[in-house]
Image (cartoon, rainbow, N blue to C red; front, side):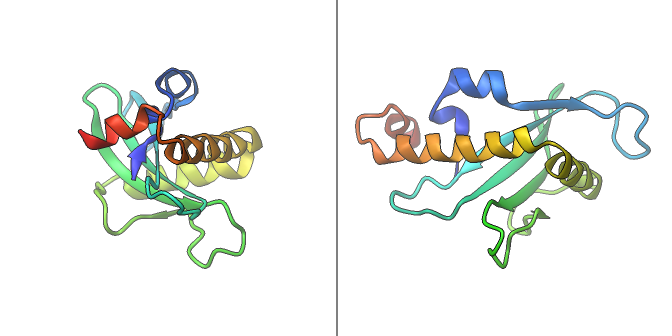
Length: 135
């Protein structure tokens, strides 16, 4: 998995979902980011995204959400990925992500568009993403 900004830094800066949940009982006041990661294996077409939920003020990762785009995927999710970092507020962040996905078709479409852009970058041996993956 690699962050979407490896493929298109400027687009990622403009389109990374940033949010605040004021007055939430378990989420502290402040800004959070949904940072997208996609599979960097050439030829893989898993049609999924990992979302690292980051608290902006300290860049602390609070949850890792796994979400597949295919409705027939048996592991579609979204769900908290058991192999990646979680925190005491991961469940609340997952609930918020589910709400966003259910209500915001444009965001869901954006994730799928970013997936395709990322996969095009991986398929192009001249794309700078390959240099970023080496480091």
